[in-house]
Length: 330
Image (tube, rainbow, N blue to C red; front, side, top):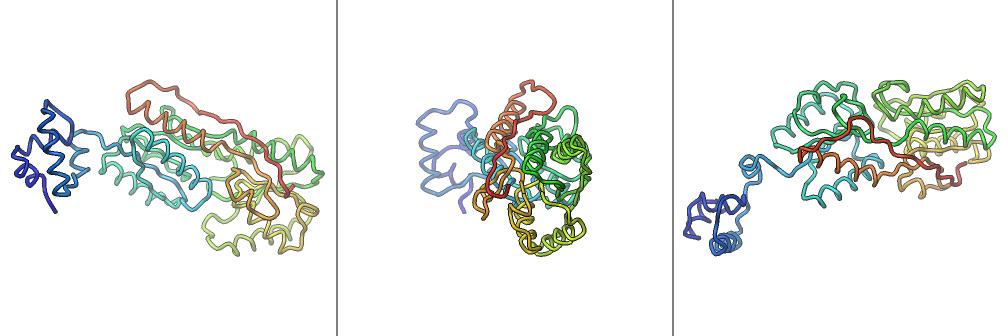
């Protein structure tokens, strides 16, 4: 594999001159620049990006930490984040934490060693101490980390209200809320838990008792999750509506309800949250609360770039409106 010394020797210039060409620093004549690039192409020389990053003190890389890359919401969010990052000249370094505090901490150390210019965190773990002393631009998704770290989120509480009210408007006498995660439905830092709060507010206003099912966060087998939901329905036979905190959980609820002998929507009405692509591909097609994922991704990258460029940014949460999308499951 050719080295920078080989390029310098064949081009008849110093190693310092080649380095200046690579990093676009100092005065270099156009003739010399073209000669260096020509030799690089002839030798198929690939610059060491890490070395260049150390020299420039800029890597043009953004670290992205998400809890589960296989989850449709996070995969769609990652797709749009990558698009807007690339459009701005940056690459994403993807870290899948699997909701593991120690793994997330190791990823943060790795991102620091790779000299990323910023970090986007979609963390859902409760330990935030490893983010507080990074001295890097950070943007958080759906999670309050610290007062000086901007957050991007959809209006989760409004989404919970819209979903629950739809079930009541469809004559459900006992809607239940299903979610999977950590921290419980009232952990204020996890903004997605506003979905549970919206559900409870509408239920209490209607004079009904809220019923929650927190699915096992460690369960990885679909049948195991469906059996958990079937057991819940057996314990609560009056439940005739389900608001699921994500479209994935709603899809599991559809399958579990069928296995329990319930017709959808005649015996059980189900609505999810996110409105990712699977919502319109299920049969029956899933009603859902739509998050504006693309617009949220664009805002996240915009906030990252503002911080990298040293601009002042407003603290607090960048809250995006949600939309009720009704399909066949309600």
